[in-house]
Length: 158
Image (cartoon, rainbow, N blue to C red):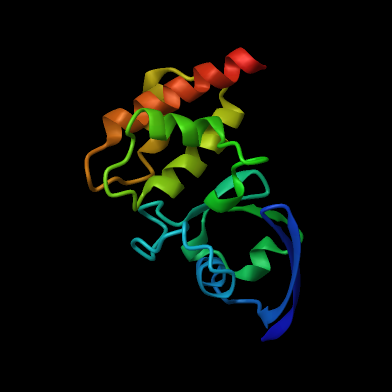
């Protein structure tokens, strides 16, 4: 059923007259051409489609538009501010925390939310949290190192 849905997208107000059950992943990729959010498994398991909605990391492949109404959605494209990468993005680059890059945006966004909730995480806490995001290339060691480094960088600036 089509209806008007309003939400924020990377800091911009959005109003769509659209089927409220349409899946957020496909709206982001097809309607807004925000292709950093990836289709992985389509079942909410792998994390490649992770975006931030209302400050929480969610699987966009399982989220109908009606569930984001009135909330702010942040994709990987909206994470940088004033031309400066988020510390987690920069840490992923500096530590080579990707191989093919397919999972990277979901990993980064999951880590951003995690570090917002856990300012000084242990290595074990990072590993446990990131288990919900799959990397098929085997970059997990570098991903964990990048997140730990970003946590230290962010803590030193607060």
